[in-house]
Image 1 (tube, rainbow, N blue to C red):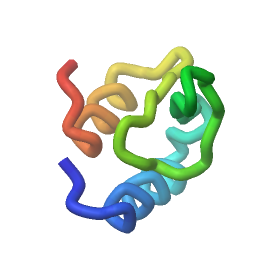
Image 2: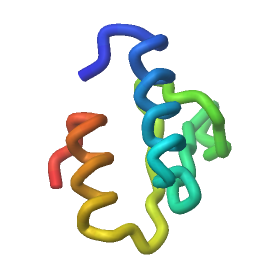
Image 3: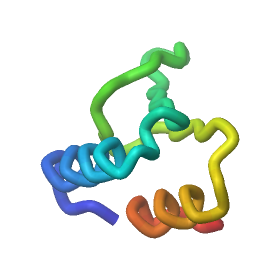
Image 4: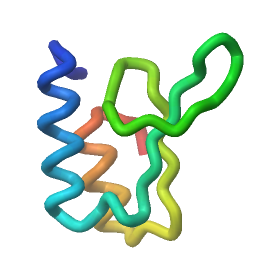
Length: 67
């Protein structure tokens, strides 16, 4: 996983520059309410809309997510 907030932000910027961000929305639960957020904090939810297999694999690898 990521060792710091900066690592998370750097990876989010990479994904946005790669053109994947148009189909990715990031959410976080705060006091049992789900909010869309811009920053990649630990514990966020990543929603991907109609990603290609390559986009799914890239995000899974970058964020150490099981596929």
